[in-house]
Amino acid sequence: MRGSMREKRPGVWELRVFVGRDEQGRVRHRSVTFPGSKRAADRELVRLVAEHDRQVEAQLVARPAPRLKWGERTTVNDAIEGWKRNGWQDLSPNTVRGYEGVWARHVRGTIGTKRIPDLTPYDVEEYFRALKDAGVGQTSVRLVRALLHRSCRLARKWSGNTLANPITDTELPLWSASERSKPVRAPERDEVIALLAAAAAGDVRVAAFVRLVAATGMRRGEACALRWDDIDGEHSLVRIDEGIISTKGASIAREPKTGASVRRLAVDADTLAALEGLRKEQERLAGACEADLGPRSFVFSFEPGGGRPPNPDWMSHAFAAVRERAKVADDVHLHSLRHFHVTSVDAVISEAQKQARLGWSTVRMARHYTDAVPAEDRRAANHMRDVLRDRPTRPGRAARPRGGARRPAGGPAAGRSA
Image 1 (cartoon, helix red, strand yellow):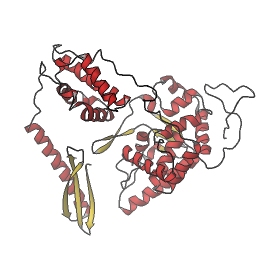
Image 2 (cartoon, rainbow, N blue to C red; image 1 turned 135 degrees about the horizontal axis):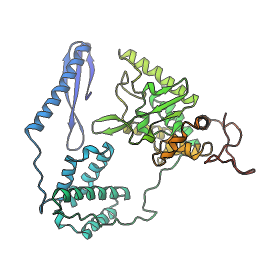
Image 3 (spheres, rainbow, N blue to C red; image 1 turned 45 degrees about the vertical axis):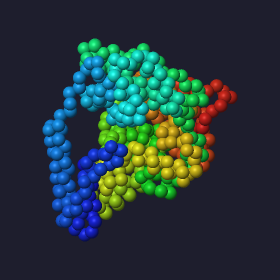
Image 4 (cartoon, rainbow, N blue to C red; image 1 turned 90 degrees about the vertical axis):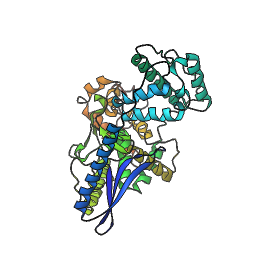
């Protein structure tokens, strides 16, 4: 629900309803003071949210969006606005957020004001180079081109092919190796151990979250979407079938984009213990607030009862605070733990099982091996348990390299735990 409540003093509640964002993107709320019981305040909050929704709907009906015209005076901004009204609903919210960002920063006040018939490929390429010279990164410029190309292509279609698409034949400038952004670095084991120790000294949710991501390599949105009935303590498994994405003013759960992301992961005993400790804390918090913690409650929720998932962006900010306390280099991000996991398990499981464990959609055939090699996934879980312990890994038999073949005699071998 897009509202919250807090008790200002006994029998008096502050009710807040989310009403949107201002032009600078700041969150706006409507605040109401309500005297009465907690149950009555909760009913009033539901009524206020419904009332706001009716007002927004009435405004949309009373003031329909102006009809766009496609012709000689159509600007790039018009084309983007047309696509936003008729097409962005089918895109991922993360993709929409990326488009909105580059539109606001790099397009709306510059090339967006130009009429499409007045643009040539030379003009567009000159604009791309100006972005690069201004310090805009390669990824952002590519996103700008994707936004322009799709919107102008749709404008051509909607104009009955009277408008040309000046983006079609354009090329992006080249970035040298020194100009490109650095790839994500997999942190060293000592750095991850320091991160786990720093996280354990803080909030129990963040500590368990960091531990789980490092131990399984799951994406941050997948971890944020975990519910308590996704954790099978008896068989030491975690089910991944949802992901959380950040939108303006909210975090929403959705199904993964591909079938490869739906999977079950083996989890080591130390990670399960961390999750069990978090469960006790969540139960204590729910009991103190007279809330119910059910099987569909979100594991890492900061709300009593776990009714709302954590925001992935907030978890990244929390990780940054942990990294600072651990005195780890700032080029290590939350997503870096996924790279750390991939690097760590590379020597102990086959390539097919590694791809299945990480949920990579580019290797669909890996899904056929998931049920056939459960022992490999268990070996990965146990290996990560030893990697994340602040002591040397126990010696063991030589692990099988990627692809399942054994290493030649005398070659380098990696330890494997039982």
